[in-house]
Length: 140
Image 1 (tube, rainbow, N blue to C red):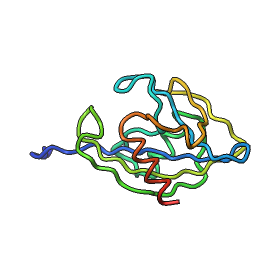
Image 2 (image 1 turned 45 degrees about the horizontal axis):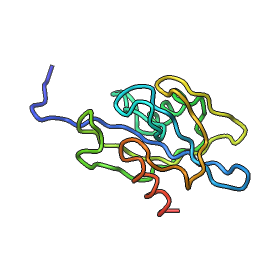
Image 3 (image 1 turned 90 degrees about the horizontal axis):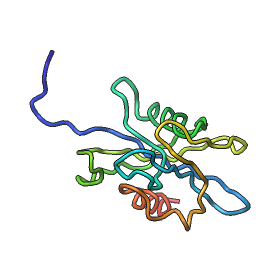
């Protein structure tokens, strides 16, 4: 087996899942069950597996953490700040994900809780997720 002599970063996905509720824009957030950032609110997401595309990882992570099925997945931006994840070098691709408006999320896998949060209150998030949300807002 070939061993690569240089360190390799991990790849992850982070998901912006917007929904209009009572005429106001909300984002889907999960409460992290495990460290790092246990009990903090974050965007749904996680690590890409070795045998999947980023889009497949986005759909899988959404389903695993919230039970929602992605109808459309649109790549937004790559975030690669060196210190963005305390576990090590992680490069994430952010996606905007459309879901069925009649489907309700349920916390599962490594999400302790899940809820729709009004966009203006979606702050103080884990990792660099505030930056991801701000970038998404600026692109709208």
